[in-house]
Length: 345
Image (cartoon, rainbow, N blue to C red; front, side):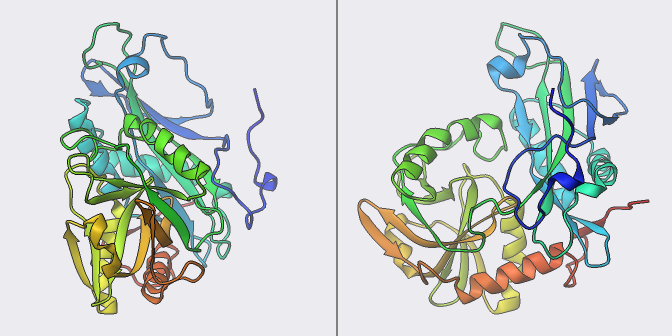
């Protein structure tokens, strides 16, 4: 078994997006209709039955969040209550029990505090990524919901999700669907990501950053960009994101919809046809891992559509990125309730 990571193992200015075995994680267990008290554990491995429900029938959901080092040395969490609420909506869809929101936020703080030496220094742009997840552990061979579950939050320091950081990349539309129209697309379920591996791999092999998913019924309207939500800024000043029952409701997306008016942009959730993307002056991907990543071009049916630039970040994309990260790292005032301080002592 590999040794635990140490702070001296990392070049904080040159972190990839990878897993590292940190000293502590939080776990709680659901049995007989209730959750255990939960607490910190040191073993990154778990003993689970070979017949555990999640291995065969897929009851597994997860979240993604980050802890941000402030200039004063403190640490922020960004809207963890929204992660807790979205996880419980995912749980509803997969017939899993809720995990209490207050316990979720407290567990996040416990994991960050216990691993505080691994929160990257202010100014590096790096963060401590947090992965809450829970899954069915009941041994079974029949198809039905588990009765026992394990909930965990682990942490790992990360840099930019996309190599090159805030630099425009190229996308291509694909023929495969990420999720069904009335399926689990709005849930952050593991199976949705398994189904994205093949189209993503095909896009990478063709020289693109990732794939643009179109709606599963008509294959005409934009849904998501790889593992992130889509946004476009029209030439007449609208900040638009897709409205659909089969896409994941991104916390970053709703944060940017709230911030867009500060820059004179009109926020809209609306249907966005792939055939109408030339109306956008700027396009980007957004999500916890991606933050904001500009899209230089989208190729659809062999035609390349270029937006602001294939090499430079658009002005509104840059302003939104600066505002969002300024809030997250504590450099700018945040809307009420967006930032949670992590007590480190």
